[in-house]
Image (cartoon, rainbow over all chains, first blue to last red; front, side, top):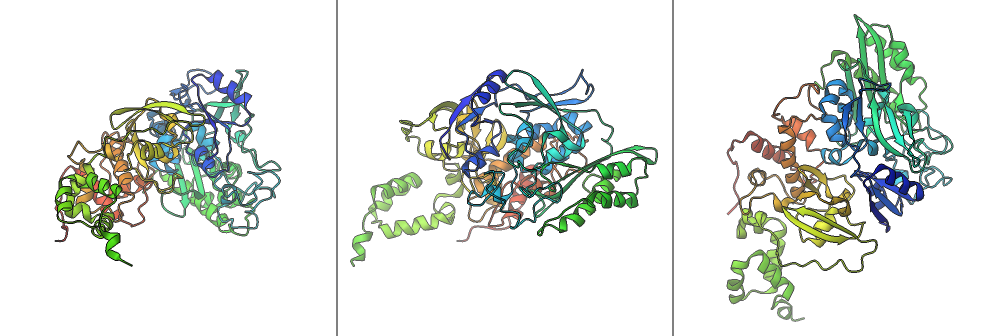
Length: 336
Length: 261
C-alpha cells in the first residue's frame, strides 16, 4: 500500500473542509472497500479522512419534511445495525433482506450505509491494474468488452464501460425511492433522489455517481411505503452465500383488493447503477397479481436488454428472477 | 558430508521455541540428548496438530498465551505515524503505527498475537476474524489507526485463562478443522454468531424478517448462511456446524471419535 496521511476528525464541517482542500483525499468509514482498493493499488489516496467518529449513526422516524413519517438512516450506521433495526425490519423488510443478502456477517458489521452506496464495481478488469480500464484510468480502454464478461451489464452500458454496481442494499433503496442527503464544504445540503445518485457510464465511467469533490453523505431518507406485506429480495449467484449477484431483484407489491395498486421492481447485477424496472412496474399497476401478468411484465422489461458475448444468459435469468421475486413477494412466504 | 555435524545441537532460537512450547519437558529432553533432527521432526508433527494432542494436551496449547516478555520497539521512524490506544483481550495497548498497518498485522507483528491468521488479506476468507466491541469483524480490512478506544478480542482472549471457551472445546470434540489455519477465525466468528442469535438478529434465510424472536435457535441451514464469511479449504464444514450446534444447545453430545494411540 502506498503511504498516506491519516486524519481523524469529529465534526462534519471539518470533514468536508478537509476533503474539499485535498482532491486526493478519501473518506474512511467502514473501510471494507477502500482499503481493499488501496492494497490492490486501484485507489491511491494520499490522505484518509476518518469520519467514523461523526454522529451520523441514527436511525429514526422523520417527524417533518417531505418524507414525514418515513425513516432516516444515518450514513455511518452499520449495515448490520440498519438491517436489524426494528423500524427497518417492520416497515422496510426489503431493505433488511437486501442488506443481509450482501457480503458476510463480519463485513456487514463494519460497512456503513454511506459506504455501501459508494462502493466501487468488482469488475475484475477494474481491479487488475495490469489491464486497461476506463473507470480506473480514463481513456485506457475496456478490458472486459472483449474479455470475460459474464458478470457484466445488460442494461445502460456504453462502449467505455460495461461494469455493474455491486451493492444489494442500493437495489432495495432504488425500489423504495430513497433520498440521499449530502453536505458540501460550504455547509449546504443537497438531496438526490436515489435513481439520480448513481450514473450510467456514458463517456465518463470514472464517475460512479453525481457527488462533487468534498461532498459527504450524511443520511438516507426512506419515504413511507405500503409494500411491507409483500416484498422479496431475490439474489441469484454462483454460490448460495457470500458472492456478488449475477442478477438480483427487489420486488414490492401494494395490493388493493385483488388488484395491484402499485409495484416496485429494481434489479442488481445488470447495470452500472441499480436498475429500476419502470416498464414492468407500469404494466403491473391495476392488474391482478397473477403469474401470467408477472411474466408479461418481465418480458416487457427485458426487451430492452443488450447482452454481451458472455452474459446472454442474464436475459432469461432476469425474466425468471423477476417472476419468481414477484411470486414470493405476493405469497409473502419469505425464503421457504 | 558429515550428517552428524549438522544434527548435534539446537540453535538458540530453536531452543527458545521449544522452551516456549514445552517448558516442563525442556531439561529432561536436553539431558537425554536431543538433536536437531528430532527437533525438526517434532516441529513437523506440530504442524499437523499432532503435537497438540500427544505431547501438550490440546487444551493447554490452545489456551496458552504467548510470552509476556516481548517488548515492542518498532515504532521509531514511522512515516505519518499515528498514535492509537485500544484494548486487546482486556489489556490496554498504546502504540504508534504506520497508518497503512492493518489491525491484523498489528496484532501479529507488533503484539505477538499470531493466533489471528492472514488468509487472503482482502476480506474474502474470514480467517482474520476478531471480535471488536462484541461484534465480529475482519482485522485485515481494519486499520489499526482507526481502532482508537475500541476493545478487541482475539482467539488468544477467548478462553478463560486455561479453561477453554465452550466453542473451542466443541471444535476439538467435533474435529472442526483439518489443517487448522481458518480455525481461530471460525471460532471467533462462531462465538459472535451466538450473540447475534441471542439478540434475535435476522439472516438472509430467516423465514420472516418482520418477526423477531427473543432468542433464536439456529438451524443448520441458518448456521451455514451466517458462517458463510469463514471459508475452510479443508471442507470441515459439517464438523464446524456440529460444533456450533452443540454449543448453542448447551447440551453435550457424545463424542464419536478419539485421538489414536
